[in-house]
Length: 241
Picture 1: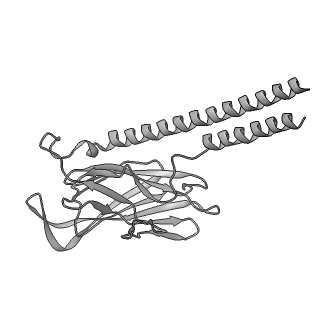
Picture 2: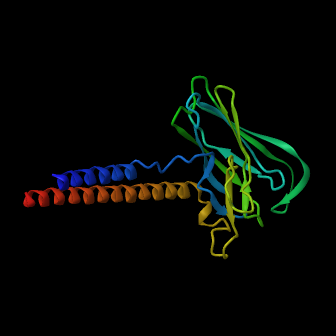
Picture 3: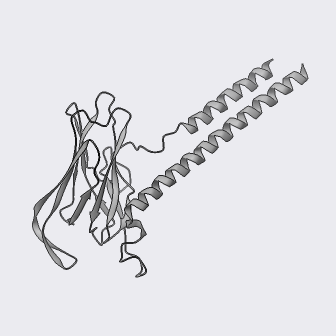
């Protein structure tokens, strides 16, 4: 009888472990981030600001992103999102800069998404706000894009902290793009495969889906193993009896 109980207990524990693996979230991160986040210097970037709602008593109704002024972006385009109004604002630079041989005196400073009345990112939900940015700076391996997330109760969370020299992620990290140097002349006009934004995002989603499948397969394998142990234990206990 004790062996039988042990087998049943082992089956239950391993089955729960399998379900835990299957139930592991693989999409929404714990903070505002850029997805995908790797592109090529001097190219363009098409990606999404992924915004999870982290409060259990309020929804998110606004996202404001601040764009760099030391390496200004001359092109900003937003993808329409039902229920949200996007606005990209330009401003004069404190000091003109030269990009692609052309002097730039003004550039985009902010992008703001504001929810229509009755629309919000609800509890346990997340939303993606797509943009196309260019031209990305050269000689810089990282582009930080600080963001402010506003909740319907008036709370504002400032995602603007930089990662320290120790590589440890701060409590409220700023969304950031990793910029790789241009490859050889065989690249498509120096943009590189990493700058084909929509395709890259689809590849990232596909990778996430594959990861979920692998985790699901692992969970099923664990559950099957637990079932095998439980059946074996029951049969052994009956033979002894």
